[in-house]
Image 1 (cartoon, helix red, strand yellow):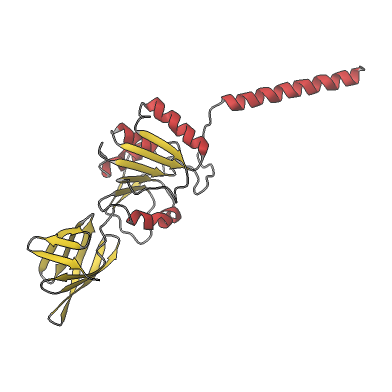
Image 2: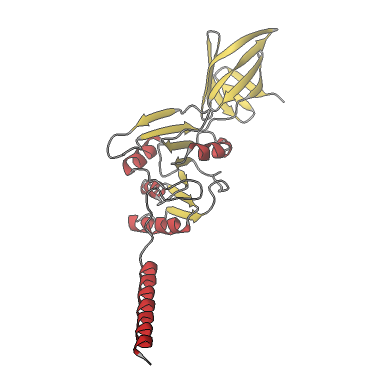
Length: 266
């Protein structure tokens, strides 16, 4: 073999060895996400830990809750909820993020309560969730809004920064500390469905509902009065007709209050 061929062969072997070593390093090195990296539905920007804890505070998470995060990223919302004793589940489309979250849960000692699945947040089963802890863009939240409304009344949705279009949050706030650009939270409490017509002994109620806010009218003996100050907080309803204040509980097709009752009309 002449010198030129020998040099070429040596170069090829060195290149293959270097490439193999680089590939081995890539396999051995754990996945590490980069802030701002593209995702299927939203770029990944982690919620600051101080805001994570505040969001769980305002949602009043307890060990009796089932907390879910859609687009759960590195798992911090789910892990923080599990540290409070809650069962928690993260749904994340990126399988590398799912594996990272599982490792993080093991390191935090909460792998038994913090679970992660690879999946589509728009089709994930959220029906059993009592709390959703989210950091999503408005377009993501708006697309999910009909599914939020199907949750049990009283379920809590706590969001980092962004609102659901057309919904008034039940509470909002700001957290101090090391939160950078992401310091604001919004809390929504899923309301019962009260829109429609209801029969009272005294007359007929008709509610129009925009999330937890109610407007409408009360008809009696051919007269009509406006419903004012109408509001739901979970299954608790309150409203005013003239000077009279009403409050009660929506239970499916019945509203029961102190001294009054209404039944949903077809």
